[in-house]
Length: 464
Image 1 (tube, one colour):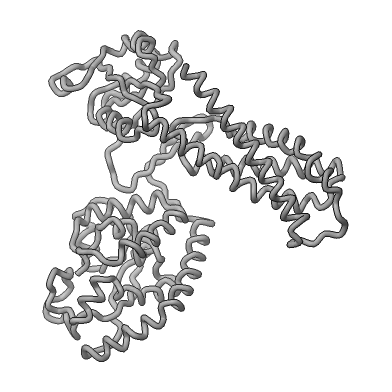
Image 2 (cartoon, rainbow, N blue to C red):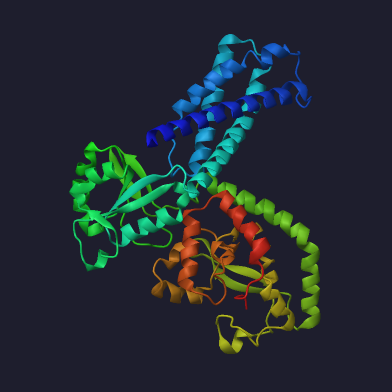
């Protein structure tokens, strides 16, 4: 039954892909030949161009999608994998179409049309697939299309695996119990169904499709034994690695000449990613600076009218690779506020603040001049908040992995800030969120953080 359901899902995805491809082809024809947006020398034969080539396009699409793994459907398939497959499948399809046109030479303006079609097709296929996954996951969350799993082990990792399956009901994987050779008082609260050698019988009895091996690291020698027991069964076997919950850890695997390597720490900020992020910083900062310039002028005037001293306050902070820079802020404290107290964290009801400064800090408006730091390349719009050198020297000695924050540029806002970890809150939690951002960064994550900052991150009770 499980295999039959999987085949039906694959067929459904294939049909939807073909429909999406057909729509993309028709849309590309309209833009190329009917919209008037793109000039052409001679008018094509409409029926020949539009309809006679659709069978070629759909047949080629089926071949391209098959050879780019579009139909290796998995319950744990992620959006980024779906996007990559859509791009890869369309790219291969476009290459095949151009090759066909090169030999046939009978489609007027085909190169322009195929290029337009390729762009439309990526979005069409990806969009349709996301809708399908949303529907499938909604059905699975309601108890339909369920598959069953057994967890090998009863320790910390096994309990966490069971919690993940329970809380992520959209996977449609239900844990039926545990198997364990070492039964003790610490796992009597769990439904231990038997020992490792009982796995084949339990798999047949409960129609199990997934086995998660979740043994502690000091028992990894037993993993091979479990795998050999499962050799004659038809189940998916996955290893839940016993790796401590370290902030910023993002596991990925790569095979080098037959040797599987597990990456524990990998920074995605390199190459084209850095160029893309920098381009986004410059464009958005300049646009933002121009749009809010009237507000900046008003704030500057109010600061001059309500307190003695300069409009801006500069403070040494550390950014990329620990390099220091002068961070700009609107002055929110009285002149020479730190002369007596030295460098200290802002506290609630801090009497060093001006009346206007209290409002500026509470609304985070005092941070807006940092757009200049972004334009100068000292900061990014999104990233870990920069800290003062005197505090960094203290934190690096007491908080493990703290300096990993400096592998990217500091930001005006960040993943930790939009989740409430700002001001006088837990440094360890803030570091955990910062490192998660560093290892899971994507351009869309930056856009999401900026959106969250605008609508729920500007005003916060922990901002003093």
